[in-house]
Length: 158
Image (cartoon, rainbow, N blue to C red; front, side, top):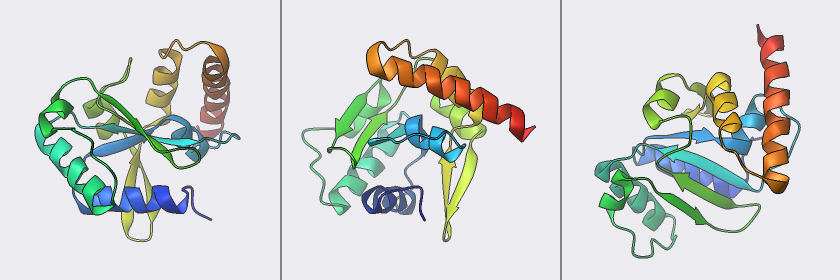
C-alpha cells in the first residue's frame, strides 16, 4: 500500500521527473514517521527560485492543472499556493515559520516508490516546524498531537 493517493503519487512522480526541488512536510511526513492520523492534503516545501517555479508550473501543465496567472518569478519570494479538494488537496510553500528549504532538503529522509526517491523532511525539523506553526483551533490541536507523537516515535527510533 502506498503512502499516497493515486493523484498525489502521480503528482510527486511528475515533479521528480521534471526536476522540481521539493521536500514533503506536514501530515504526510507525520504519517511517514508513524503518527496514526489522516490528512486531506499533501504539503510541499519547494526551493524558492524562478527556475524551480518554472519546473513546477511545467509539471502542473503536464498534469492538466490550472496554473492560473502564476509566473515563475513569484516562486522567488514567500508563497503559499493551495489547490484541489480533500483528499487530493495540495499545498505548495516556498517558506515555513521555522525551517527553510535548504535545511529541509539537506537533512531529508528518502521514501522510495519503485525507482523514485521522494524527499521527506527529517523528524527533527518536522517537530521544530510543527512547534512553530502557532495555529489555533483544530489544526493547532493536530499540530500539538503530531509533536507529542513524533517526539515519542523519535525516542523509539534511537
